[in-house]
Length: 440
Image 1 (cartoon, rainbow, N blue to C red):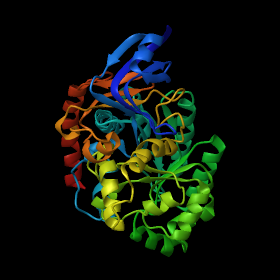
Image 2 (tube, rainbow, N blue to C red; image 1 turned 90 degrees about the vertical axis):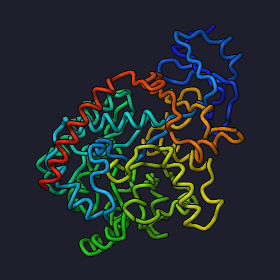
Image 3 (cartoon, one colour; image 1 turned 135 degrees about the vertical axis):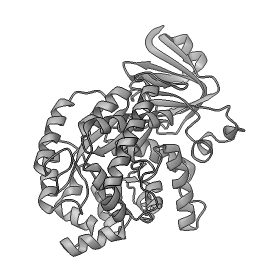
Image 4 (cartoon, rainbow, N blue to C red; image 1 turned 45 degrees about the vertical axis):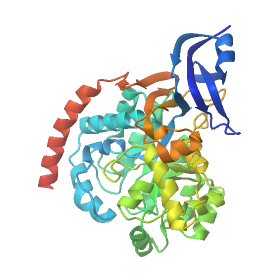
């Protein structure tokens, strides 16, 4: 028998491999943070000697979902400012509060965000915020896999005096986390409308120099397009294309107001789109042309955005809403079938993380997986497990989150931090933020 660290048994394994194989009464062997083997339980138990055995019974094991665009720390703003247009929401409620932030608020808010993600089946995320080092420290504490970066603005933030200081910080963080198994750094210009051509060029150049991905908001609203046309004489996506930003590996959040011609050169660039369906709906930003993106072969992932504009960090919610919204918008019930949406949340997410170890359960891939309880009423009866994952599951069925072969959440318990203590600390954060909002 061959030794392994963990042997996991489940009624079903949705592999998301090249053939989209679904295994019944199966097991997965984990060795050194990677999938060592998977197959029928009887064969696996005969071949592998584990240090730890986890029998999940009537559960479905699947790759951990990837939140391709979020601001995890913004859980401290959840419900503070609802039912407002994007620019008013940002300028009158969000930016004023963020000018008073501290690293500790960002750490606590991020840790709560990561707790919500792990609890509901997300094991990786692409994050952007201020005091991002505190957000990365929280990801390290929670055990989540994260690609993060300090947001770059043309104006000072609570964390840094300006864009030059942020880019210096990005360089420092890239060096600090160069060999971290779960954390990596991206270059994160916030958007076209909060930067300048010079800042975007500097971000582009730093991304090339350090071989880091770019991650930024793009073409989120028609209002953003008008601002860009007035300021720069071109639409946001065309503007970024002409500046060469899209030539680097990049993850683009939203991409709502975009023309067919712009989609053509986005497809040629290989850029990954992070579709944020709930945030787009809540802020009435519009409907991103996701079917047209997929027709062009573009990699499309799913993101929650921050809890201030969603108000959930639940990727099962995003899957269900994505499937339903595009059927309605296109008046075609065949658009975005369940398997396509699950692909977006897993394999598309791996593309957004620029990490092909993620997104599927196959030999040599990262042992990042979650397990949903199949005995809950909403998961019964079972005809098609992929249909259930997209249309029936809520995320609260999740029993386990494993990252890099380590169980970081199991049956209501987070293994790396004290969740009850975190809840108490978040009450204090809420009181502080409420006072800031009243004075803003």
